[in-house]
Length: 613
Image (cartoon, rainbow, N blue to C red; front, side, top):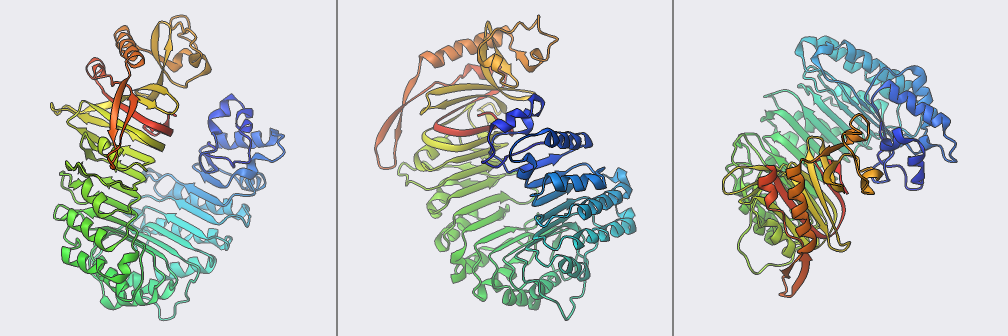
């Protein structure tokens, strides 16, 4: 059970007052106020803590989001949670999805959720999410029966504004009748998300009562179909005239459509701002129809089919972007296929749109990563604030005349990048405050240097970083050197099997510190032999003598031999700054890669999804 961000008005001392065993449950106010319960024991402990507390403001009053990952809660538990946590606005049921349950456990869990919600009577609850289901077609009747039993839960929640049902089951058929039932029970819905359903072919009734409150519709279809899938948007055109966001995703390629349905949707849904297509064959027809009636979209996501047969052609992209309505586009996501000329697409977007966010992904089964020139992106999209690249290879041109760019956030996933990328960004993107590297690989280097001395980073995320030298022998980065110039601090982190650890000194060896306890921070000696049976000793792994000697020698160099580097700004002004040399010997001595990060300031650092600073 975790509290991932209490309200700021709650003093930090409350987190510590609960007890040592609860310290990890109460973290500093940096996340959303969210309570996750994974077992009955956690629920009992939570009840006991709230019962024993004597604070002026009850702790349960600060819980806004409740996540239940176990399902033997009783009728009394629902009533007690409602009393102790009266301000809950969001409830999330996360049911196990296993074929071993044979649908029976799933049915009991639906009944449990219905009973819980029936007894959790509060007008504050506005968001409900249910994740459940098994993917086994042999239980068609049983699963469909339990799916229908979800609706009584909704009847008692007319105040819901957000409903998300994720059943992950191809046997659950959805029709117009079910959609009408949902809206009759929850007339205030603003967001409706249906994932993992089979949206079978259905006839749109002649009389449809519009759901004027709905603004966001998200569909995820779980079966390959060949019939006219545009019947869905035919229904949406009648049902949701004030729709602002539409997402359609399908496991199977949706090919057939009727142009009459497409035009009806475009004519009726003129408030549309965001539209997202995944594995849909007719987005060009729909986008063209939407732009033809003057609807201005701010966000478009287009992920074509896996083989790229229905990608947007150069002529289609050019025609769409030349529309006057396309100038309102500020966010664009595109899955690059092996047939695309991505540089032409980027230039076309930059010429006709004012993009603030661009996301480029790889589409298809090809193992080759599309190559994208960073210069092209920044030169063409000069108002870009956020760039996300995934499964691509980034390169930079040898351009000595760099124009400063206002890019603030850079996210790279499964991306190969040139070793000089961060030297390039250090000069050109001085406003960069967020950097995320997820399973990325640096080319032609044995260690990675992220030296950006003028940058004040709000957050840096690094996950599974690798480096490939000329020998093409990839090394996983497990040692990080972080230098903060404004605070004149330098930290070394080494990662073992249990995650990243801050390196601290204890006579006579360097150690990997698991929990960064007060004992290790104060530099006290640790006798591993004498305390081998204690809980404290289990929190450390001593480095062997070779590792310790290499680290001590190199860290001594870091302390005594700082170097002066020079940075040339786009305006030609040169600035000198002090940095620290890397540790090249670590690559050979430890058998893993090394990365050095140098910046003016860093607010928080995450390594492999764990916060280090």
